[in-house]
Image 1 (cartoon, rainbow, N blue to C red):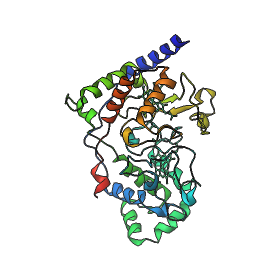
Image 2: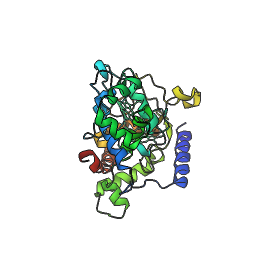
Image 3: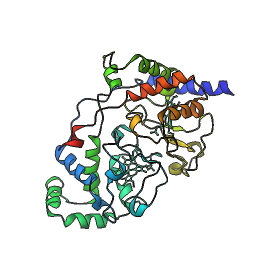
Image 4: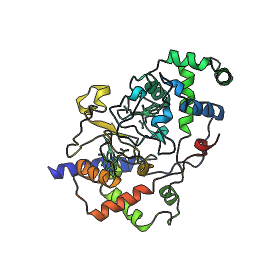
Length: 310
Ligand code: HEC
Ligand code: HEC
C-alpha cells in the first residue's frame, strides 16, 4: 500500500520536474496601468461595496497582515461568519484560477463574488453603482478611464488591476535563487532540501510555490474536517474531483495563519506535520520539520509600495 502511494508521489514529482522550474522568483518590476490601479485601490478599501457600508475587500484581506484576516472564518456584514478560510490576495494574480475550488477563472471574475455574496458584502451591483454615482469626483474618475462610467465591469476591472500589483518580490529565498547564497541560512537551505526530497515541491512549485494545480487534500491519509466544501467537485460534479483544492501559495505563509481551507491549524510547524502526514504519509524527525519551517519563513517578500503610497 505504502509503496503504491510513494509511486504516486514520485509520478507527480517527475511530471512537475520536467515541465517547469521547481520554484521561480517573483519579478522585481512589473508594468501596470497606474490610473486603473489607483482607482482599483480606492474601490478595494471602499465599504460602499457592501450592503450596510461597513465592509470592504480590505476588511477580510488586510494588506498589512499578509493579505488575509488571520481568522479561521471571515466575518461579513451583520457579523455573519463564513464557511471557508480566506486566502491571501497577495500574489493571487499568479494563480491558475481563484477561490479554493477554482470557480472563478481570473481576478476580475473573482471580484464579482464577494459583493453579492450574502454572508460577505451582501449588496447588489445595481445598488453599489447607485451609491458610487452619487460621488461626483469618483464618477468623474471612472469616466476618465472607462467610457461606460461606473458599471459592474469597470468596478471589477479596476479592482483586478489593483490586485495585479499586490505581488511580494525580494523574499530572501528569491534572492537566494537569484544567486545570493547567503540570503538564507544553513537551516533554511537544509529545509529547502527536505522540501524537495520529501516531495512537498511536487505540489508546491512554480512562481507561487503553489497556485498552479489542484490536488486532493488527504491524498494518503484522511484530512478530517467539518467544513462542507468538497473542493473542485462542487464546481464540476466529477467524483474524481472530490476534495481537490487549489494548492495554496506558500509565499508569506508565516503571516497567513490559520492554515488550510478550514482554518483549523494555527501554527506553521503543525501545518507542515499535517502535510507530511496526510499528503505524504511521513513522520519526519522534528529537526527536519523545524528546518522546513525555517525555509518557509524565507518566503516572506516585500509588500509593494502601492500599498503604503499612491
Ligand atoms: C467577508 C470577508 C471577505 C470579503 C469582504 C472579501 N473577501 Fe475575498 N475571500 C474571502 C474568502 C472567505 C475567500 C475564499 C472563498 C472561497 O474560496 O470559496 C476569498 C477569496 C478571495 C480571492 C481568491 C484568492 C485565491 O487564492 O483563490 C481573492 C482574489 C479575493 N478574495 C479578493 C477579494 C476582493 C477583491 C474583495 C472585494 C470586492 C473581497 N475579496 C472581499 C473573504 C472575503
Ligand atoms: C499532493 C500535493 C501536496 C503535497 C505533496 C504537499 N502539499 Fe501542502 N497543500 C496541498 C493542498 C491541496 C493544500 C490545501 C489543503 C486544504 O486546505 O484543503 C496544501 C496546504 C498547505 C499549507 C497551508 C497553506 C494555507 O495557506 O493554508 C502548507 C503550509 C503546506 N501545504 C505546506 C506543505 C509542505 C511543507 C509539504 C511537504 C511536507 C506539503 N505542503 C506537501 C497540497 C500538497
